[in-house]
Length: 609
Ligand code: F6R
Image (cartoon, rainbow, N blue to C red; front, side, top):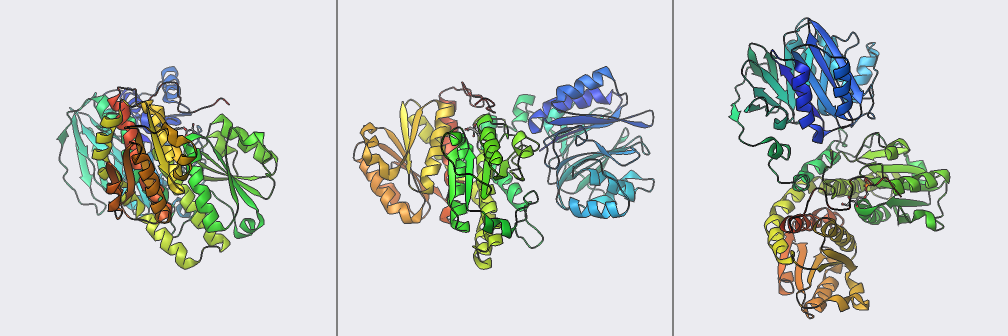
């Protein structure tokens, strides 16, 4: 996710664009830049770090002009830096481009352009757009854009200006969001409505493959076949605050709802032409996988819970011993890490001090480091040998939701990829499992829709409880741990997860009349045993809630409420069963009047040990 703002009018473009970018910082904030057309010249400012750096730079050294494009970046290809910040340009600096999305075939295009003599200065996929435009440019920017988009695969929203056509701005939309704002004698493009809401309330939602030319005289929208298309102008009635959250009350619920699409991004953008998994930043080969004698996973909190599931899947697909440790504990035992160890480090932020300390220790002992992280160019990413970026986009709410489910997706993909590479997964089984994984984004969407109402009702019932218990067996136990953590951190209700079979060894003493117990029972082989454990707590007066597959209707005999999930393989159930615990934590926190996105005592990134 990145943020784009473009302006065509009579006002100072930098004022309008910087104001807009400030409203889009939730889409990305690792670097930013502007390209402004003034007196027939194209002038640039771009800089790493928060948007305030760009604002100071423009204040010190103003760029004047009334047409321009701006960008705030959330890195995907290339670390956050001045060079990788947008806009990107052709070599003589006459064409500038800002981009949101991912150009999937950028490596192929880059090689083609290099062969033609083009030089590249950044690591971004966006720079190929500027160079392609240069290649096709014959005096008319719009015609060059028509030719250029035919070459792109992937998702992109683009803003383009050129000093050779100084009275126009071209914008393109394919899959990544882009809107056109229609003001009095001025026009805007933006990734999202809040960027322009102070300027106009008249908006066109551009559709896939729309190409729009903006001039001071007006706008024309074309499709890729160069035909003019009409789009309806809509009036926006919300305020800026509501629009930033896209109508949701909090970032957390917005991020819960984004999960289906970010899982899809993480998965589908890593498939090659034959639909097989291709991991571009992982350079591990089959020989290496037969040389190592163990995999170590380290992480903290939610990322650790993703790691627990990862361990199970990796062991299954690779037939290899996988050890997992909480990062803050890793240093205190004899961990037997050596040069035959692959360490997988999981961290949304890539800056967690405990995780980094574990990474550095393992590295000093000769381990190879593969990181699963959401932040491109983060310290964890920089210090790793191989990287899997989760592409969940910025996670603003402190409680991690979409980062967790994309971390699980990462583990599924890595396990499948390594299993095939090592030969422990045959082609047939690999294809079968991958095909089922591809159906998961739709099932996650269904889980969100189906859990919503029940989660609200249960939240209402538990909101004044002092404590609550989650139980489960096998993979369900790990989801139970994640469910309990979510509830604690934002609702402040004491929640604990137990391995269901372990309850009777002491913890069952805590169960009394109306104690809420949430049982996760999705694993087929373990189902009957979990049902017995639910009966044990029910017999002691517990208020029981079940989360299970749609085929297990009999759970209603032992549970007061049941949340049903679509059928899938047992190993994929954690992607579905975590949804209702996330929603329950959210609604319980709302019911209690808590600051959902910024819970007390917590920070998004924990940079102290
Ligand atoms: C819980 C949560 C934390 C983080 C943990 C690790 O919702 O967000 O438990 O998962 O602090 O953070 P990262 O993944 O950034 O290393």
